Length: 528
Image (cartoon, rainbow, N blue to C red):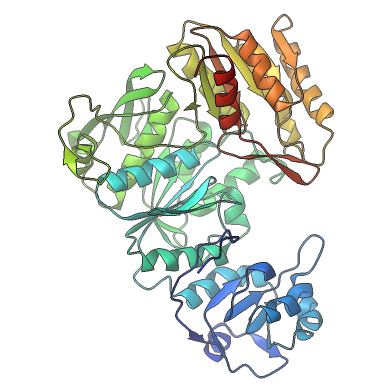
């Protein structure tokens, strides 16, 4: 069971397995005391070790995990899994040492074996792409809930099993955490699980030991070039998810160059979605109406199948995310008419069907920090968004422009120690799409925040020299400066922080919630 400080969900009733059988199954070499115990869990962190665990000691950037083997032993670890470089350090723990050349490559399969996650697995959905992964994951889980399915969820924002939720550290957990989470979900009778899958999760083997029933692809745009040297390499990382050893079926939005390529190069059965009526995608998405807080759309598929519904979110891109979620469910075996029926019913808080004259048919979903409206009925409309890439800026600004006659004030910053090549483009897009721009600090980490802001400012000023642009380093002061530029009927888009509740500076996470701060500022101005 995960403790209160842990960021991992674990089975409450772990099943012990023979450690000698594990060694035999995977052909590990061993040193130290004889291997004769049982194992009930596996972890990468010595701080998360629980009695009965196998401690996986990997080489890190600054330390080798074997340096912490003694601490792991003191917490109840029964053995250490490491490489040749870590053997001597691991032996100091007094535990049996299991040896493999590349422990990270073994983690997924070992964790699957320990937690038995390949035995009667739930239906597994995986979502990848640059933008929209989190939204699609939440939409999938929401529709499953409306269908009466007990579902589990793992996203950038949180891990969730029913009412049990923990805050997420990584977009996709480590392999050891994923399999522990799946085992915990099995105990809760979860029938379907939705995982957000980053490119890093694929290349760093975090989803090893899993075969998804259906995987979905949103888009591929300029981001993460600090991890992947070119867009081609970035694409290849995503494409790996659409291979037979990773997934059984796939769904791809083909409105961009990379989606089209993925559809051509995928090695699993594939279904495609597009907004282009002249294209050859199997599913056609039509946006029927856009409102500041709801988007209506129609999805038409093979055999004259059709579904019209809505999503309580801003933007045609959210309709595309919802369409991807729906088609992924169809590909997993759900009937489109059954989905349509579920989305057209009003339910009470206990999930019971009710009569409600004010009910608007649609997906009943809340996605934290994704174009999330935090303002009230008076004053400017304020959206807090997680978008921090050029394409995300374009999509959200275009959607806002279509639903407002007022001015758009955009507030944003850029991550430190992350892909710097996108910063000037982000500034340029903001200047072109908004009527006023406020640039602030956003997770400068170990970089000079003034240098980050300078790149954003260069891009904005070069794109629209006469645009009203403010530079306000402190995020709280920056939001109040943006609010000072806005009036009734205007829109403030605060892009970047989304659901996050901290501001990272020089290794320190300073508590800060853009959503809470925005509400406080609106209250100060008498608009909430």
